[in-house]
Image 1 (cartoon, rainbow, N blue to C red):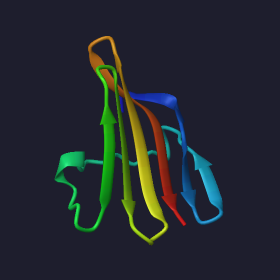
Image 2: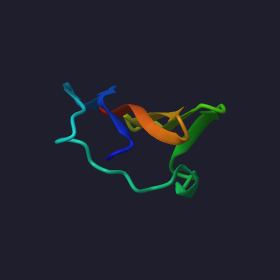
Image 3: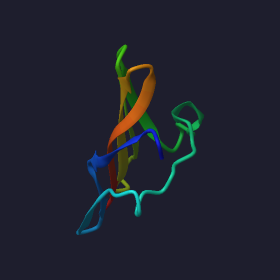
Image 4: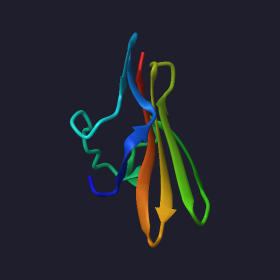
Length: 86
């Protein structure tokens, strides 16, 4: 939690309900991007020296997630999260 920059940009979208992220409603994700089963999920990511952006979707399901990380000083921080379940 110490590496998440609140207020976190992005939202949790569940159907028609949209919720902004807070410390209280954030659920920690523990799966590493490189460990995701790509036969079910389509994963795209872009990395620069100071940023990392990943997008994960299940094709034709209405589910997707996006995460943006930024290098600040010598530490990586989560600065953006969009979780969609339509």
